[in-house]
Amino acid sequence: MAGPARQPIDIPSLERYLERKVPSISTPIALKQACHQPTYSKFGFGQSNPTYQITDSNSSKFVLRKKPPGKLVSKTAHKVEREYRILNALQNTDIPVPRVYGLCEDDSVIGSPFYIMEFLDGRIVTEPHFLGVSAEEITEMWHDAVRTLAKLHRLDPKRIGLETYGKPNGFYDRQIKTFTTLGEVQSKVMDVETGTVVGEVPRMKEIVWFFSDKKSQPKDRGTPIHGDYKIDNLVYHKTEPGVIGILDWEMSTIGHPLSDLSNLIVPWTISAFSTGRRNSSIYFAPSATTPGLPTRDQVIAWYTEVAGWNPANELPWGTSFAMFRDSIIFQGIASRYAVRQASSLEVKRVGEEMLPCSEICWELVRRAKETGKAQSSL
Image (tube, rainbow, N blue to C red; front, side, top):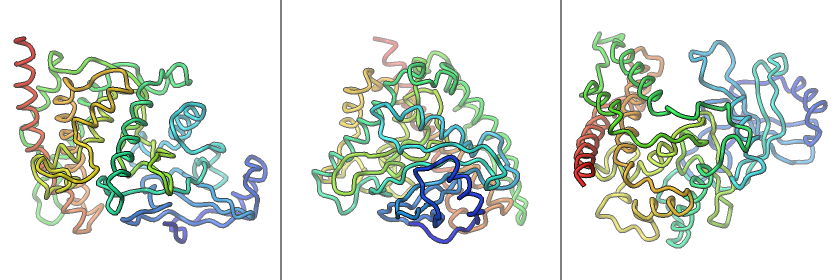
């Protein structure tokens, strides 16, 4: 959904820019800012980078994504320039992405860099079990999500001009270093009211030791990855079960395809332990028989058919790491609550997911160790 702009934009300045650089958009324009709605939505996301719906004088719709105003906490976050670059590189591939109309890096136009892309008039689904959709459609919607991801991972970065978009190898080593450092810093954050520190992710040292062991790591690979590939970052056709666009490329890079696949199957990973945790669901529990919903093994088989490699033996490691990453992310949310940078009860509850998520991570690490031992003895 779109509503009044919470972060106002200088519309006359933007219109002058559009008249010079984007003749496809007819001025004058109307502008609304994206706002999240937890349901089927045509324009309900884009919370990290401020996102706006443009309606031009011909009633045609477009989307503007901009860097947040003011001084940013992280120099690496909110890189709309990177979003634009990968979207532009994927324009002439078989990956469904919105058409892009240009990137503006001139702060004087609306205060920060931005790019403009096509408005996709389709369905964004917030629940991966596709509530209210027929069994046949659920199967095909999941199948196309998996097929689309596999096609992305099949691309050669150099052939589409992305050879410098990220390092071609060592993705997981860099991830281990990043999340270890984050975990150390976040663990020391003290609650402004109680004086209690957020604390370490349980078994942090043992977990990091396991992931750092070269013998246990998956074979190094480097393909374009989305970085947060999941059902609610996809746009589906309004009436058909096909993906017409992938959104929110802010975390994209050249990395290990296992990370995207592990992220996509998180509902099965967590629900195997509990259906009461964040990102879990009774529909994905091992005992569930939800009509149309594929099994985890079916998803992996679909992926293998298109991607050209079989991730099955590496998934125990990949899903373990996905839970480690999520534990650190939840710890970060707890840290922001501790200093009341975000103070709602919902934020507090999300931060409290650190412990149960780390417990799942440790159990998966234990199983991955056993799997590794079994494979090495063959």
